[in-house]
Image (cartoon, rainbow, N blue to C red; front, side, top):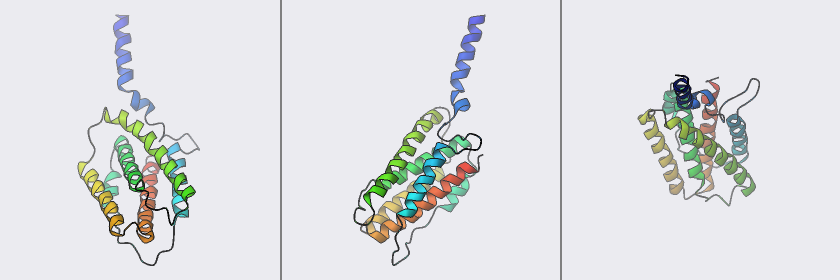
Length: 186
């Protein structure tokens, strides 16, 4: 009888492991920030430093409606959304066609922080996806279309300084909004 209770307890512990430990990258301790917040704040600072004055405004729209839907997601679904968004941002910057107008050291710092975040969140998502159904497919599809538009925008702008400045501004808006998603959970 005792061994059955032990095995039941073990199975229950394993099944709920991610709920008790969760995504440590996103967790905050009292009076401190999560690692996600620390790296996001650094990424935001670097993105602001990368800014240039350009002669014309970009024609990029921000997906406000999708973020309004995300505000109503469960916490685990929010982590999946944040991970997918950061991965899309990283993929956008991997095109590496910005050498002439940004200091490579600053870009390397940005990419390093972004990669660290995507790596950590990908680990969280692996655990979460094992137990969660897919989140809102409409939001995911619209965000995929948004990032595809950004990629095509860069191509149309021939990877110019003004094209990248438009991308930098919208990515900065994404980073700021992703941080607020986490802050509203606490």
